[in-house]
Image (cartoon, rainbow, N blue to C red; front, side, top):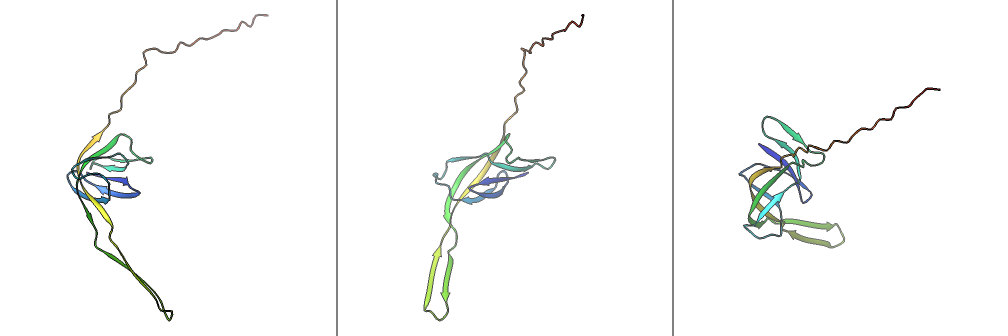
Length: 126
């Protein structure tokens, strides 16, 4: 069972009980996070595709830790000009543990007050 979600502009594949690296979330370690933007869901038997999201599904998770990726070096140079620049960047991320799937059940609304139909009959006697 897995799902594709949209989180911070990125599409991420998640599974229940697994740790997943997501873009940095500015909440504290140990806090709960709710993911409602589910794009696709597959439970092995049936598949659901959202338009754009599946409104009846959401996932709950817990932030395990925060961290930084390895440093990426950016080097610029223009030949014969004496121009050289060396820059680095470390991207931040958060690790979450997906705990459970929450499905919102659709409530059936039965209207007990049915609208009365009024029909008017025209006499065509002349």
